[in-house]
Length: 363
Image (cartoon, rainbow, N blue to C red; front, side, top):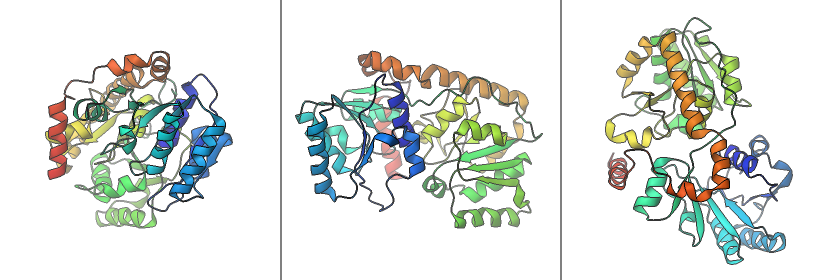
């Protein structure tokens, strides 16, 4: 998701980027950026990875390189715990470099938000509300974007039955509960009688859990299709004849949802109760439907027909064109101040966001 975001920004800057620099900082000790992920950034040929150095040495190396390069602007994208990137950005500001923080904030603000003289760009209304109203910091609201795959979408119900999909990183799939992912797949297949496509990486353990759940309920194993990777979601949806995406929960796929709306594919969201809606539904389009529990998901799925899919698909695509199309990024780059004044959707005020945060802390 982050590498795709970098690609989107670089593609709309209107000027050649001097480089993509990686700190290599990763608390989980995993490889910081695979070659496939790096390719999605569009900047693989000008990438420098400073990850061979420990924290202090990495910061020193990057700051020295900044002195030589002398960039006019830095776009800072970092994980909440990446202190190295923040130290380097602070040094860049002292050198007179403009720093834009592309604020990745799934649950909590990134530490770079507190840098002096940094320009903060938030991608979701909830994150922007936290920045503006609770932290009292100026923030530009610039909804996530993705390349436009074109308005034409594949015919619905080509297989005769609803063909659903879930897409997301393994960590998001593992976090799914009430219902857990195997139960979700069973519920979907029982209600639709169709097929379910999992788009994205999995683990052998997760696949076995799903397959065991299907056997327990007498569902054939070929009713689930595993697609470990895809060039774009739009292409995967076309090839797999997807009619409906079920968004992950409690950690939704923001970029995934934007790409799905761009492709004109309906999305359904899970939120267990209205008090969770502000967080769970912040990337939804107004006409999108929500399910609260397994029973309400079943009721939703059994009522879906061709007319429903067409109407929802058109609403999703219209919302993408209005809010998430790349032209919004170009407009921002031409007039950044307008995004700092852009009002948030109704409901994203300080008290509502504060109450939502307290609810999540308690439950």
